[in-house]
Length: 104
Length: 104
Image (cartoon, rainbow over all chains, first blue to last red; front, side):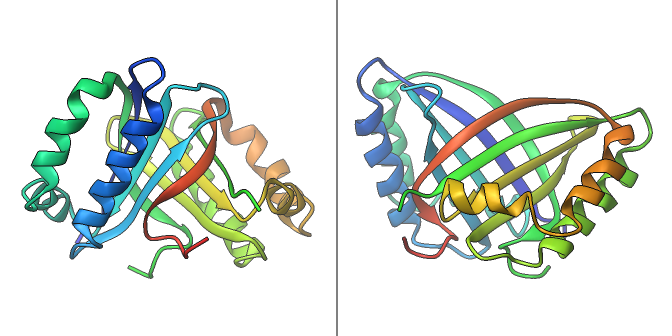
């Protein structure tokens, strides 16, 4: 099966990045390494104080889509919405290889 | 120590993406999971046929910088240059958490 990835940027409302960051980390805990999740990387950037970058790699697009229905995830999304000024730089990825993921 | 990440896009010369992809994968093999490399993710994107996205996470910026001196890496960079039309979307990342990397 073809692995599936997504990367993109959340821009927090001014001064609220760390609150949003805590919610995203809480979301990763709620998901608790669900079946098919190979990577869910949450990063800030020195270049842009309100930005949070998220890169996800899944065993399949189906596994990614299913994650959106995990109990608790929707609730976290609703709590996060007021903290988010924008979402951008969204790119779908087809992982090919490299270092750090389990072999396909 | 603060972990360090980098993400960005290579745009291949028209029709030469797969050649560039093979060189980047070869580069990952040459590096052979060097000390301090937690992730070196090479992806294509369905949205842009000539694009290759690379996301790297290292134990430190120092570990990343040292990787550029690994024997063979410079030679691969030189072979890759004629295949590259552009590099863009470069963002430095400060990994905070999530799923799929070893605990800090």
